[in-house]
Length: 264
Image (cartoon, rainbow, N blue to C red; front, top):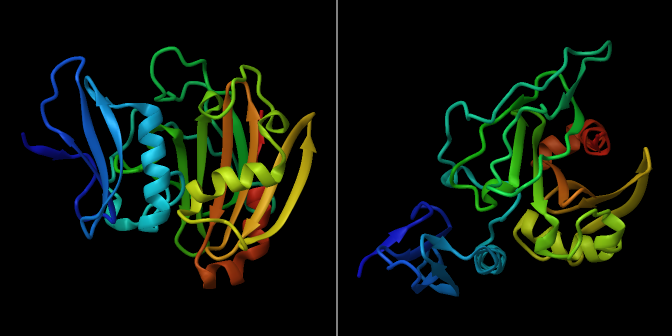
């Protein structure tokens, strides 16, 4: 029986599965690097890849292929959608210093399927000139990537909103219940940057705003700030990255963006 490619064959990472599984059947699914080497297997049940198996496959494959599951996929993987159904403007007008506040609109769809509670809104600040970028249908993070922003001269950011129950049996989560900063960055850093974070963590801080705790990390290289917190039944990862020249020229602004993230 033939196989269908679920991600672009031209990308460094793609997934294949049996094209016509019968209902209720379990068939093998494999993640491969562009070179053709099978990295690991999950199972396909009925119409798709089982979610837990899929995540393990993607996380393991990402480090081997050098791509990220949650974070910033390369342009070769970007099959851009047009204006998405859930993409609603949330930027304020610039303040007196030229910074704008983004707040996730209450009416924005979450795309997380039946049974999910509404996403608790979040906000952050960016200098004027940053714009929302459509999330790619080729993103390995799938529906867990809620938002992307970019500025061609300064860098990029993404917001990941992931189900807490994927890693802890919690309904009213806090980041402290998920684990200490060291555990959180070791667990989720590789999914953001596509490789092990050992030796890459430059700084690790804890901040509290309005009674909610945030873990703030700086990693290099790649250059990236990651802010992590949790609320309701979701983990939030706010990722701000840039290339070497952008990082050097805009370090203070990128750090200010990362530290401005709040779940409201």
